[in-house]
Length: 137
Figure 1: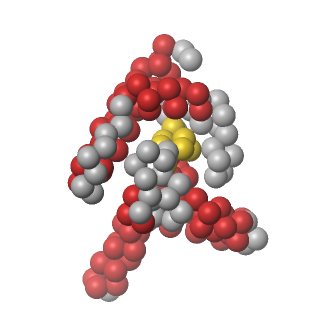
Figure 2 (figure 1 turned 90 degrees about the vertical axis):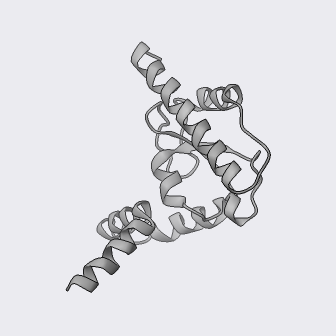
């Protein structure tokens, strides 16, 4: 990694650990994730492909994902590295559900795929915005 990539890696990994530990605390878990463990996992994944979209993982795009979301009974210790875009899009789906979703969407036209992925990445924010716009109209 270049010096700049290393700086980004350091900042992003610290941010990921902070956010993850805040979520664990908020959900009532006593377990915490260590920065060393996260940096080892993330560092090993740099330059490899995202397990969902097959994009190359970089310090800017790296993210940690629970294959089974915590909100659906997943374990705090079960983490995998993926790209931020896929992690945001996956939301509260399990890895198996998200993989099936990606397979199904791949059968649509390119334009439809782009629109579906854009809406999935926006998550609840997209649907809240649509509801507000309907109220105004």
